[in-house]
Length: 232
Ligand SMILES: Nc1ncnc2c1ncn2[C@@H]1O[C@H](COP(=O)(O)OP(=O)(O)OP(=O)(O)O)[C@@H](O)[C@H]1O
Image (cartoon, rainbow, N blue to C red; front, side, top):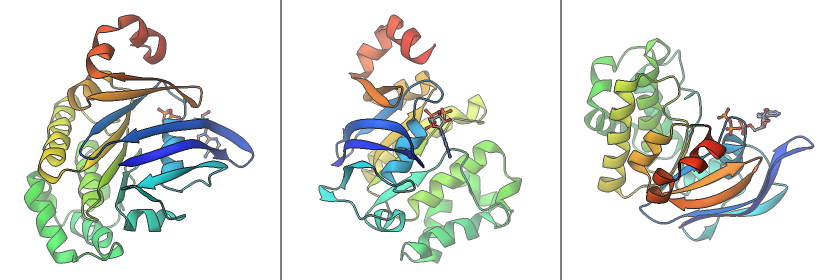
């Protein structure tokens, strides 16, 4: 299980997230919902140790998480950041190879597995990542995270800047990876339909805290909640 307890942190002296606790069971896909600016990305940066913790703790696969971002990646925490952050001047292959090598995996094998798993990357294998479309970059960012063989994957707004036809493809891909590889996922999103199509459970954030935990069916039915907390 992936577990966060009393997460409190932010930027410099400004505290953005307060006492956030949540968990993702093995093999589960969980959504992290909330309007713009409620702190979803900040919480993910806390989980990955990109920002320091003022309070709270993170457990990965039932053990206390290492203190550094690199250490957490090494014990199976994968992260696809908002905006994707692929290396734009490197080719698709190089992006995947670097991620694999950094995590002590065989780069050649990781590249071949990724091209097998994501056929849309194959014709672009030697193209510079910066020249790919938003959707292609999102798939590359996902392939790169998977090259490190994570047990839990944090995805920050995977639908942002991606055209609708590719959004469905990304949803299908995440479900397939979850099923075939058993990788748990926490997906921060504003796109409710996307989340309802992949996640069975959701946490909804408001002003830096978890306002409620709910399941897919309750969320789908509760139009008042959708309007109040998500503005949809
Ligand atoms: N690097 C930063 N330095 C200072 N404040 C920041 C920084 N990044 C974000 N914030 C602030 O933290 C708050 C939460 O932002 P965050 O990006 O975590 O929200 P979010 O829910 O992920 O929203 P979005 O959907 O827009 O990404 C906002 O008020 C934002 O202005």
